[in-house]
Length: 202
Image (cartoon, rainbow, N blue to C red; front, side, top):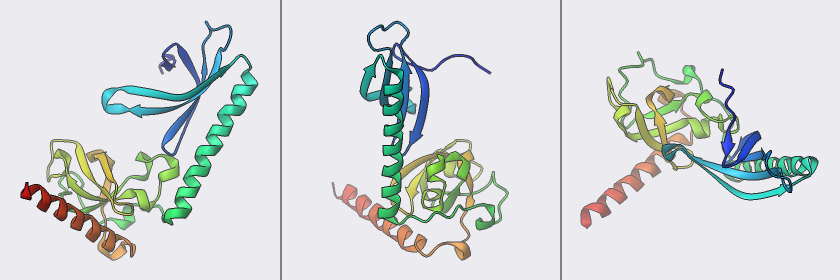
């Protein structure tokens, strides 16, 4: 196991909790006499290997910054709860019993409604609303794929999403699909068709 500490600039990361759209960090700078402790939000851009801190505040009082850290974590929790209530997203977790039989490696995913493994999602998003994806492309979407990338739209929200081939649990069994899947898929395909038509008009 590596003992290498995570750093953000000159700051060592003492604690980090990712809830919702942001991670909350508690930081320490041993070289700073005036404000060795700090709290900030952080958003990661994995493709570029970047971590972008924002809304940082610092203090010499460790307890003050710990209070701030906990307040921000509670704020992120409240935000996720509010989003759940507003959208009415289902909390059921889908497993292999919801999938069609398959040998895995030879699955053709393109155009299919796939179920993502719950463990590849952060805990607050491990439910059917985030697992069920209409696959639209990526080298990993084809039968006997050599590539890994899988692109699609999360059916419940319609939002674009990027995955890896290994993230896919299987193809959703239509007989076990929730009622919201069919209209969600139809809406996404209608939008894709409309967008494709407009591009051809140019």
